[in-house]
Image (cartoon, rainbow, N blue to C red; front, side):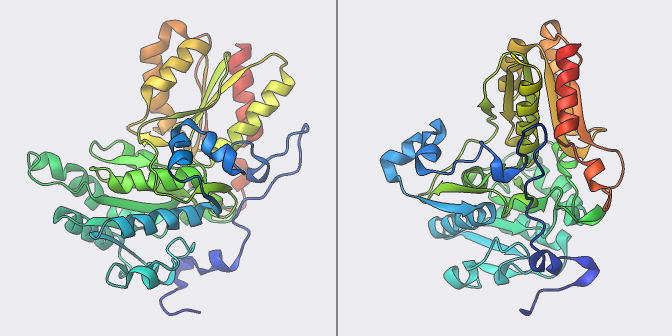
Length: 390
């Protein structure tokens, strides 16, 4: 075992030793091949990757792509950030050894341990240090080892980072700060390694919150987050680290923050999600369109959770008249509630059915009952059916 890795409080090493956290595919149900491995959302060829309008310019600049999974794409983004910005630094618990999920592998060797370094086991200290470095002009890229452990840093992020620019009348800011945190269900994480805490931070003005669904998205959104002049919390769905594989452009590129992506056009019902939930929603759409011939679903990935792309969702719901929102976090006061409220305000006269929310339950995240907690394909399909049949 490399020095620095630890096994305190169940914190992590078994995630490296066990490969089961990379979500595989479930057994086919109603002919639907479930799981990331069979997803049509992933770009498995260079041509498919560069066909995306947001990446179309890459083919003219540098059309080379390389097969990467999500943690490799995150690593590549940080490598580019360090190479193109002499003020950029990466730090967190065990990051110089590669981190629990290997996302920082090789960075310390490439850029030196004065730019990629370990911190003590103190999340409040990591966030406070990031704020201090960003305040004096550094580009601080900090890792919280699991999103579940971001709560000791809550005061620093919500009371300091989010308000730094405002309280100084824009004389000072911490816009060079990005906090990375592996989040969401992992298959066997239980209540301390599987939480989705995005709604806690979405309530706080001054923070941006981003989560990717795939390697291409992870690289482009992370680079955009690092270079954005506002503090950003970048949540990485940990069960996608190895499960999601794409042909990713090798060159430096960014994807727009606060811009949702319409993954599938449709006319009857709008379906909104983010992160790993997109693959469940993809399967639910396939099942719904199979069970209800003629049904046409529109699937939207928010990508940026806050500030989220209201206009794209409003435009879609004004067309379809129906909305289904899904996320892994608990239902009460989750992002689904915020989206539902905004759509009611903006699209009330166009709605043909009550808005459907498919979320985690209002309980601590369970271990052996995880499969009952998660918004799976059937629960999402039922919500689509309820909206359409209303």
